[in-house]
Amino acid sequence: ARSTESFPTGDARPMIGVHDLELVDGVTSDEFEAFVSGPFSACFTKPVGGLVVKIQKCDRGRGVGDYCAVWSFDSVARRNAYFPGDGSPTASFADEVAAKLPPAWSRLWEMCDSVGFTDYVVMYATPEAESGVENLYGVHDLVLADGVGPTDFEKFVTGPFAEAWPEAVEGLGRAILVGERGERVGDYQNVFVFTPASLRDEFFPTPTTQSALFRDKVAPRIPAGIGDTIQNMTVREGFSDWAPIFASN
Image (cartoon, rainbow, N blue to C red; front, side, top):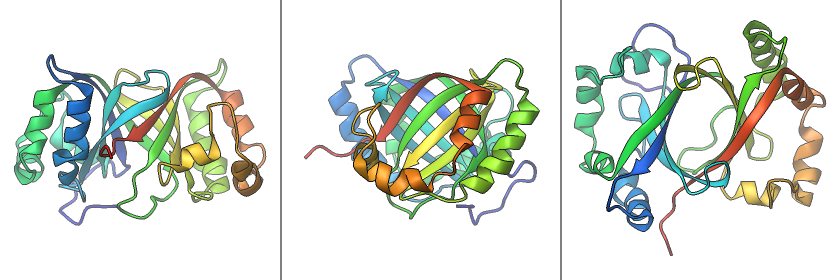
């Protein structure tokens, strides 16, 4: 959702910054997850200065057990206003975001470090689901196949692909991202968005198993050929499913 605060001029496309996290010495996974699902959960109940930051944990695919911080900026221009080319936070970030957050924001960065990142421009995404529902993201890293250029791929994504999948199908949304800054500049991500997070297991009990619910309710509504075109134009380097961190029972 677009912030109601003053909007920076420039590129208005949404942006997702994905930061790989590493716990600092002495911080256990149990302690970190209790903090994320407890005090930190109060930091971004709504966008703050056009930004939402969530902590996710990989539970399938490459990097099981790893954590990441997902920075959702309402625009590339907003990211640029807060973090210009050298990546250092500006006074605007301090005033519009950091100063408005509870102490848990500072505590987060005492418990973990960012050890790598990519900022992705959102080329296409289905509309967000209702606010307050936690998503699970199935993230597939893509590079272009031999002979496929960025212009042709991006025209397909923003044209036929977007037209064929204009909204979530039974809670399954989609997004295609392109790296703009960081480790995967020029590479892509094909993201499956499950809302609520539990829907992933209902549709795909294992990474290679489709449920009867998926085959009956979702598959018939997916336009034929769209997935095949993505597969023909790209090479998948691997996938990771990033789940929200819930409080332990």
